[in-house]
Amino acid sequence: MSNTFDRIYEVVRQIPKGSVASYGQIASLAGNRRWARVVGYALHAVPDSEQIPCYRVVTKEGRVSSAFSSGEGNEQIRLLRADGIEVSEDGVVDMNRYQWETPWMLGWDERQ
Image (cartoon, rainbow, N blue to C red; front, top):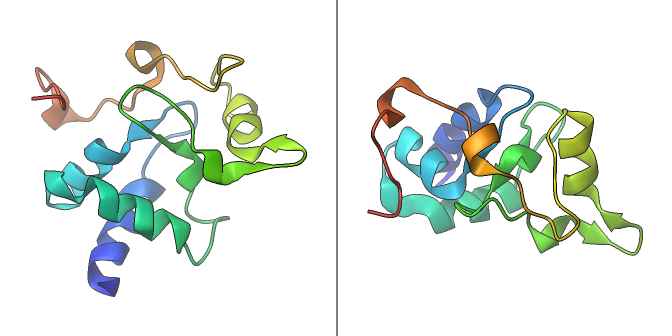
């Protein structure tokens, strides 16, 4: 599984500041569009959050993860806003505006 996680981490490292990607998008770029849940597992086990910006991964609807929440709020929202990404009060990013556009995505709809 570590080889799969390494592939996922390599993709996540490439998400540019000011953009987000969905779990399914990361899965597809890592080699298997059915790995969306595996992407979640990998991000929970991330070895170095300084080098792997896992906070830039959201659901396909743009929702942030509750796993980043603590008594002081949601760290993912704070980090995304520090990147210049607008996040609604209920924790949603506008995917039409902020989703990382990769060349293979032209005409792609992950809900298919």
